[in-house]
Amino acid sequence: MMKAEQNQVIHFALCLNNEGYKASLEVGKLYRIVSDEQATAHGLIRIIDESGEDYAFSAERFYPVQLPQSVEQVLLTAS
Image (cartoon, rainbow, N blue to C red; front, side, top):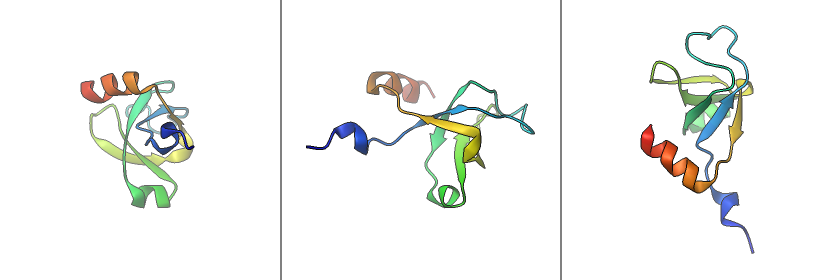
């Protein structure tokens, strides 16, 4: 039997590197991921940055984080 969690989409990523984007990204901060298959195909991740807008950054700058569903629900509702 497959766990339901394995099918969950990850909605948040932790910033590991803000070099060149110090005004847009904060290291150690959790950012909301915006689904973008085209960006993913090019090694990018689309996130909502400090401006409140979504932009594509190198996926290597982020670590996707699977949060408990209750926590994710609160964060998704707040953003």
